[in-house]
Image 1 (cartoon, rainbow, N blue to C red):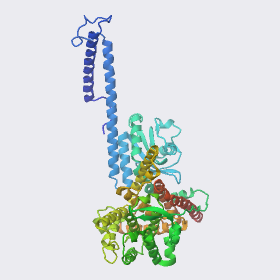
Image 2 (cartoon, rainbow, N blue to C red):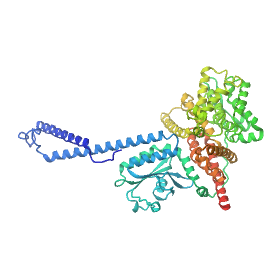
Image 3 (cartoon, helix red, strand yellow):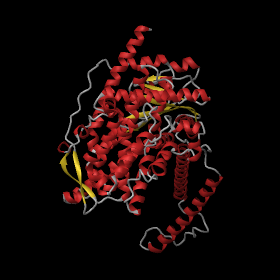
Image 4 (tube, rainbow, N blue to C red):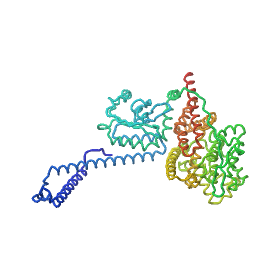
Length: 638
């Protein structure tokens, strides 16, 4: 990109044109005054025409010419700024779109672009780790890895105060810490530092050093601000992986990180239990309406968030889970309304159960029924579930139960890196999710003995199939950030709509209208199944949440070992999960950067998840306490 500089030849030609235009304008002004100023004491009769002779007032003409040149320079500068801004925006957008979910590649390319558009020698991105109250330099441009305490130094102050800092002379600024300069021999002259803020929380800080000529100006401030605005979403999605990887790079850092957990070790507070409600089917409009309490139904603990798939399976085996799943499908009249043959449905349940690999510690039938239960409860409780049709609810239950069917026990990333048959079949895109969705229709429902949807019309079956496929694909973790963004955007839109409706004094019945477009209903379904899939750390029992975490850690360890065996790059967050301290570290980060933001955003649309979000916060505190104890034990034994 060309550097800003003096006016070029094209600008000079424009300047000359402007001057000629100024003369023409002055000539017109002169002629107008001559014709309409007969009463003026100043006579124009003997003044030569301005087009053939110099203006009588040369000083005024020079003033006009000077003003035109100044305006032209301003216009040229404004155009230059706009071109520079547009080019920067294009390059940033291109980098984000080409990152393919690779956070390291994204950071590296963004730093290169930032350095080029700001004309400076170095640009560093710091991830903000609010748990340990430090900033961690991500790929700091060849400089040895740097950690900055939150609130210390220029970057630390920028992160804490959430303000942009433009320092023209670093050596004379009290906020500048020259320790790194002394250690590396680098000389810092000028600094431009800006926070990337998401929902009032600093996710990252971008720090530019040493403007090539002079100091950073207003254009640079505008460009860096633009850069931070554009990077909010992609950097928030990358933050969890990058901060966890940075912590895991050093065992000592992991211990020190866990020591920073608060000293209080209070027991998790008991979440307030509320009485859920059920929906009854309205045959006239095909929707559900709220009419009774779940406690009135013969569901027992299934009507409570405290129902625990792991404990049920431990006590009664997986047959108890099959019975629970059947009860949840029978509820709402999901099977009755669609005339589903019970024998075929029970055969379907048994085939689903046998299709989940018992060797998987996490992605097994227990997980499937746990997700089904969460979505069942949300379908019962959520006010917005009244927008769903009977077919929507049936599709939600099938998708929840089958979303991980025949799961191999490792991630999409492993499939792609190993060039597996599934990765080749589905072109590296949502590999496992595509396979699970295909399995439902190509295997489970294609068999006459397990096809319990034989009485659906063709149109209803197409609608059902479309909804199930969309929901299962929505469980791909690569879409997690997009889900959070969509929930926030939807909440903003509906908040504005509610305000508008209130201002026009519409009735409550209008505001609670159950008419919803297919697109909106599918949006609800996709969000509900993702919430169910991410709910393991939202259990009211920390022991259950801990059990799920240990199970997924076991799968991660097996994948890491397999990747090592095949000579593949080991996934960073799977590399260090051997100790209780490692597990606690991972779960705190997972809750902070993945689970809690999702449920906080969802709560604005589905207030009924508030209890789950409270459980999540309670479990996070329990993980902190566990981590502190594990850290202290390891330190004392070492």
